Image 1 (tube, rainbow, N blue to C red):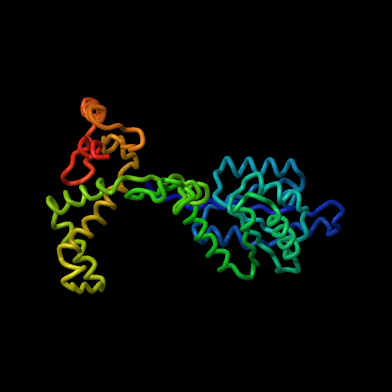
Image 2: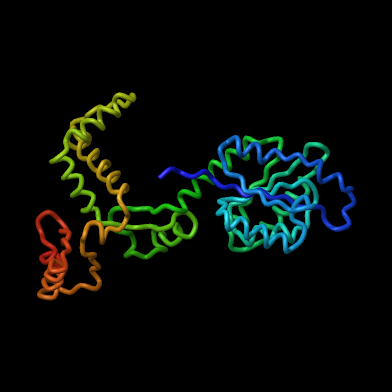
Length: 312
């Protein structure tokens, strides 16, 4: 599936009430954002307001937020030319809670810096939103900084739609606050953190080593063709050790190409040591798993699942 471009919502604000600048002032605005973003391959979503230069009322905020939701924008840029009613800007950003940037226009006699400073200060007083308290500030005279930020946002958006798959057991008796915190990662960085026992990866690597040794050789040759030097020390790094490490990497890459659902994909019965008992109950569990068409993942090379459970 082709990767869709980053959707950037761009919106400006009309003059506050009794802000005497004349009717022609709105038409004099020359924003660099639409052309700049389109040139870089981003998809620009810019609501239009008949007879206005931008958002002017709470109703405009609602309509703008609805259009951004419908179009599925990934981040917001506030295109600021002058002093703006802070409540309108804050309401829009809080309503959507997306990565946001504040762009101060300073060309053509405009002074958007005051609005950027005021909105940024107000956002830092809001609790509980990383997107809002970390709002970035830019000038229209420094477009490269804005483009660099958008590249980071594009990576972040892809991470938020991704899953993190790790192999091996968790630390600290699976207590999230001990050494690793999957819940925190899921709240701010990735969609889901999944764990598989390392035996799943090891068995795949063994299969690659046995059935497809040429894959390992081709990968090592590819590394060396790109300037990677390999120096075996006869101890920690041997041809056999490096080959198996390469097979583990290839196994991980193959695994990540598949839908991440270890219980359905591998047809393996999940193990939870705290809920399984010993003796005949363990053997009954294994028998039921096999009757259901599930393959029981062995916990080490010698012991079967039953003998392992009986040893607990």
